[in-house]
Image (cartoon, rainbow, N blue to C red; front, side, top):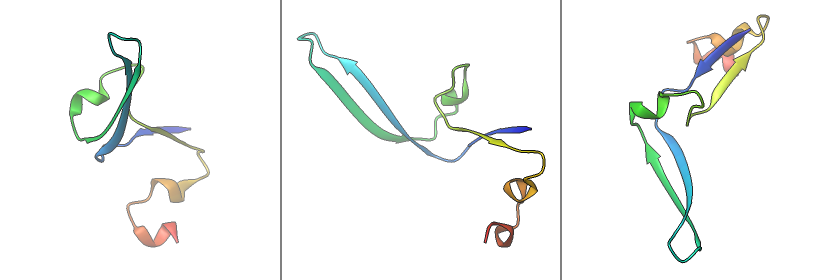
Length: 64
């Protein structure tokens, strides 16, 4: 099994509660490397089966 963390810019959704108790949702794109600090991580982790070698290829033709 191979676990990979996406290093591309990512959509982040943060939900917090303001002083009145109302939930506030903030959506933004981040490329901040601090998102990779964890665990838990703020980014998607991808898991590949050892037999799913196409998922680990750098050649885009392998994904077609």
